[in-house]
Image (cartoon, rainbow, N blue to C red; front, side):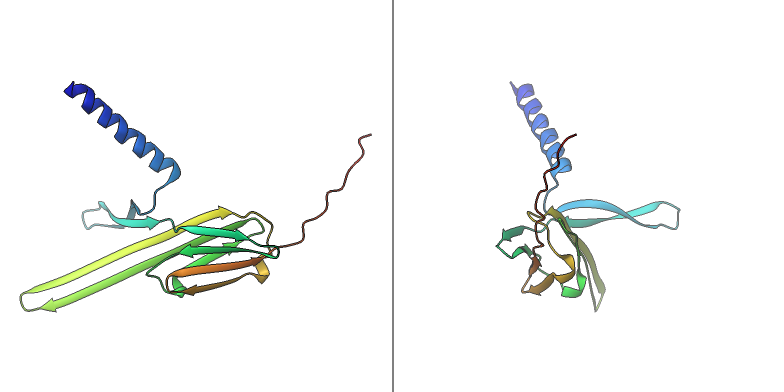
Amino acid sequence: MVDTWNDFRRFDEVMNRMFEEFWGRPGRRRLLPSRLLPSGEEKGELVEQRQPFIDVVETDNEVIATAEMPGLEKEDINLNISEDRLEISAETKHEEKKEEKGYVYREISRGSYYRAISLPSSVDPDNSKATYNNGVLEVKMPKTEIKKKKPIKVE
C-alpha cells in the first residue's frame, strides 16, 4: 500500500510539472545565465517571472485591458500593441546594502513580468493610451472599423 501511495505522489508531481511547463504559472522561477565565474563556469541566477492578471473589457468604441503589476515604476513597463495582440513586459531590479559593525548585508533581487494576449477586436495601436497608477496598468485601445464582408462569385 505504501508503494502505491508513493507512485501516486510521483505521478501527481509529474503532472503538475507538465501543466506548469505548458501553461506557465504566476511567480514561476527560472534560471537565467548571467556571467562566467573566474573558473570559467557559468553562473546562473534565479529570476522570478510573473504573469500579471489581466482583465479585458470590450465596449462599443474601445478595448480596455487592466493588469495588476505591483512594485514597478512606469518607466519599467514596456507595451507592444498590434491590431490583434497586446504584449506587456517589465523588468525590476532592487539592490539593498547595509554595512554595520562586524558585518555587511547585501541583497539583490530581480524579477520580470511578461504576458501576451489576443484581443477580441481589431484596435488602433497608434491611438492607444496607457496609464499606470498604484500598481495597476490600464491600456485603452480604440477599435478600428470592421471591414464589411464582400461576397465573391465562384466562376
